[in-house]
Length: 186
Image (cartoon, rainbow, N blue to C red):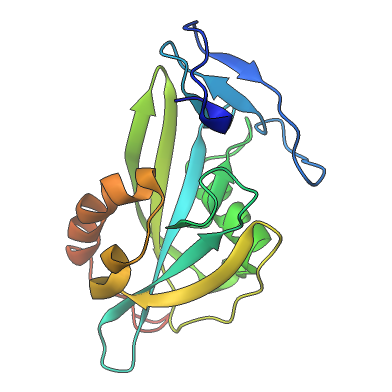
């Protein structure tokens, strides 16, 4: 299904411009339309940040973004993330997007690994798993209705973005294999 609930004519991947409520800055901003007509944000792919931090009991919490109603898949919960610019690594893109959407300072994040969680007609979405020594304060931008630290056991109880829902169990399994950093010296 394409954007706005309509199927787009099959074609080779192309960039497609649609209105955006605020000025976009990067060369990666724009839609890619797959051969089956589905639209994906990010001319050079996209990346999101799965940020973990310890809860008081030592278990992991993850930072989730409640997507603004006007955004693609608005009203669902997912990861801060977005389009990757041509000059960026996936790690750089995910950290930049998390700063833009959640006010997260890059120097407080430790990247642990990356996982390609979606791949369609050459377009990819990569999830970057990172840790923070504590549950950081957040500052939402217009793309976020809310930002919330959520216990890993409670993530699936929320209405998740379809792409995030499809990858959550895999991401959780990979994250569980990486010890949670409790502080920067870990």
